[in-house]
Image 1 (cartoon, rainbow over the protein chains, first blue to last red):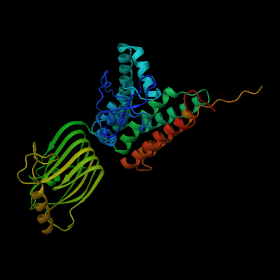
Image 2: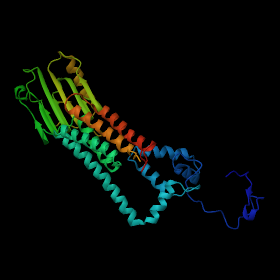
Image 3: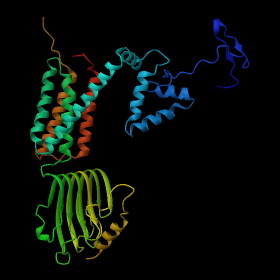
Image 4: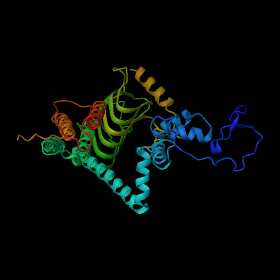
Length: 337
Length: 65
């Protein structure tokens, strides 16, 4: 408080200023955390916290927004504070909700929370089931089911509506839509597959495929002096695909990762729909012409003579190998021809 | 006396949006269009947003047209 502001004695209608030295027989009122009704964006939580701690509420607003992107705990905390911390103005919707929860009792509120969690889990399971069905090749039936549920909602709208069906229908559509867009394909099996062909002829014409798991193809046993250009298709639904080539081989071609990361000859990209055209020198020899597709996960093409198939040491994270030697080897190999 | 047809606008809009998403998935699976993850994210956000918008603007609980 500003020291020059006179104290006001408001007891019994007396509004005369009192001197700063005059002691208050009751002592200062206890400081209480209340949501602000005057300084608010949503429910005045940040405004109340700022007033309580004597700092700019903007700091709390920024903290809440940032924390939402790190697990969402800030959003949860904001919601709980909005419900359980009273406002200094007229009771608002959040305060009324808090009052209802208090009247409801602990166990009943806990039961309702459990039902809500179960409902969310059920919706997630529904979306996951739709995605799974699309991934194992039932895309068309699932799409027809989504259309049918939508049509059912439209018909129900003329008979009073069926709003309980909206959330399951949207969950179904989200699961099917994401799986279809990611071109999820789990029909090629689940597990861990390692291939180390000894000759180019032993590489299947349609390449190596896996639905879910880890797919490792080690091409370092090939005689690259005899077979100068090797074509390889790699197709993985979900998981990790690793391709190993000798350091002296130029890696060319194109790769696609639906969601995840690709690290091709030391070049790292991540995100959604990660496309990568590799190898600028089409005439370089020896050369791997790669066509790799990973729906969700990680694709690594490791041009190293020493990297272990089981634990190559490359990939995301601070404790992995520097990829600069891979990039240098790729540049050198692609320049030779 | 003529009875007025009661239409739940939220169910109607949601049904139309869900059906449209289903058609998109069907076209993708049939190979007619190739929907990328970026576009499906836009479509899903637009769909959910449209449902919320209709629900918030004109079709609150128990409101029928």
